[in-house]
Amino acid sequence: MKRKHLLLTAALLVGISFYSCKKQLNPAQESVTKSAAAGSTAYLKSIVLGTYTRLQGLTANNAMLLTSEETTDALIVPGRIGGDWADGGVWQQLWLHTYGPAHGNISGAWDDAYQTIGTINITIGLLQGLPVTPATNYSIAELKTLRAYYYFLLLNNYGNVPLIISSNTDASTVKNSSATDVFNFLITELKTNGPLLSASTPSQDPSQYGRLNKWGAYFLLAKLYLNQNVITGSTDNSGYTACSAYCDSLSKSGYSLMPNFLDNFSSNNTGSTENIWVIPYDHINATGLQIQMMTFHYNQATKYNWGSTGGPWNGFTTTADYYSKFNSADSRRAGWQAGVQYAADGVTPLTTRGSDSSLVLNFRPQITNLYKATEYDGVRQQKWQLVPGYQSQDADFALMRYSDVLLMKAECLLRLGNAPAALTYTAPVRQRAGLSNFNAGAFNADSLLAERGREFVWEGWRRQDLIRFGHFGDAKQFKAADGDKHSQLFPIPTEAIQKDPNLAQNTGY
Image (cartoon, rainbow, N blue to C red; front, side):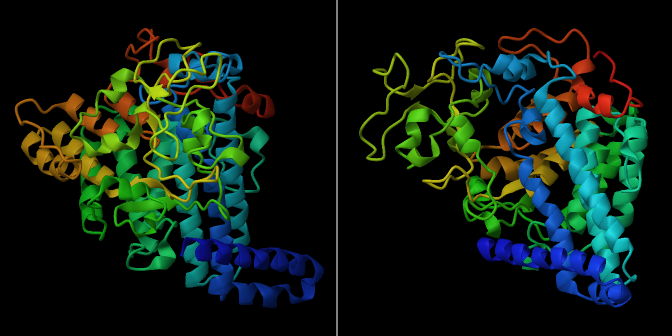
């Protein structure tokens, strides 16, 4: 099903190129062509789905989602003995919060977001040039919602960012908008366009798979309101009240928890009733999800038939402190790979690769050194099911899951002073993980933050969670507590300011 959908998208995109050429070469027929295009569901679908392919860049090791995770307590990239992952210290700077405006990951994430926004703006402009029909209005609303998602990422990571919402805008002349202005723009955009989108889940309408619908827009609104106080500097409870209301709407949308946590990350997760919005991946037709390559050890290549790919890269891991959040009864612990690793026969232990190649490959939770860790330091992440023989996986990457709706609702109720009601929303998430619910007397904000850390590890939410709960600057292994809060926002990249001198740098950089 997944490949068929992706191939269909590719075939439809051929129509975009054909239409573009015809428009230039046949101006006398332009009005007829535009009218036909506005009435063609296939053409409009190809225009919209073509823009969605930009999402596949978000999960690269130096792109927005994982770069944000690399600044948290959940994902550490130590340099390894022999020099792997040294790279001038860029990965370790993210862990230590010593990143600056010239940091490549931070620049790359910014560039990818604005290139995507530019593509969306061009596409919206093209659609606005067609005759107005319900179909063109729908397509424009969907693209504006997709653009809002990218601005949501920029807002949470960079704060005061330039708002560019037209392809006619000269991007070299735009000033930063305040975080509050960007927040208000997104609230208006999503409230205006979200209700115009389909209220059907992918289970109800398979054509909605991998696309933003009404519920995706409401999920974004809930997230914005949940983070309102951090973003705007407000201190009241209005954001939590609004977030709670959107969570209530989402609870009636038709999404539900999958009985098995790992089914949300399987190679055939198109049937997940929990995944509200995903990035579709396929190891042949839509490559890019390579988390296993980033985290597994080099010598695991033979076990997973990765010899022709050059093998995994032995980089991404977590600390013993973070791994300890998962107790032995927690089914989510199966998402980590720990202990002795074996060849494909399940009997022969694998060994390390370097000068100590006689050592058994035994992943241990401890990281011994930030710059010269051993090859076997750190447990590895395996919750996204891999496809043997290929660098890229088939598992679609969930950007929004229904379990997040439940835990957002729980957080709102807790912050609004109703802890007993909050526990009714943590209960199904805990039960699915094989755990009893929290004890009412001991349940607090730290309990909920830890639960979010277990449920959404490496899914791109940890940075804003830590900031919202007041723990982003805490001390952690190899790192003292932050001296101030400036690292809660990434710097505006040096290259961006060089291209647009009107941009102001964030405080502290």
